[in-house]
Image: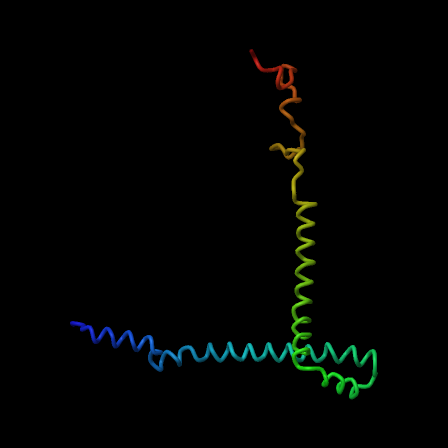
Length: 147
């Protein structure tokens, strides 16, 4: 089969312009899932922001559900979303920071071997220094060298 220049150009333009309708159908469920996840996350952030404003107002100032809810509804939506995002990010971030701090502390205190002790094959710790250890003749490292 012989391909002409026009055939290759038609294939290239159809791929660039968006392809066939079957390509759109193939990606449609993934796009819908992504968009619904973003919308769900936005809803959760807004609800968290509402409650992070409503609870302190209700506890501190009014003690009444309706009054606190009315005061919360007067706050701009951008502030509510910002507070919700802050609370959504702050708690896991603090938790991760504490866990990393604990892991580093445990590794530094418990798992790092001391540079002063060496473990031989029998498992016994010994402090061997070639300059101060005595060989079988009873001489130390530097003096045991034959000249």
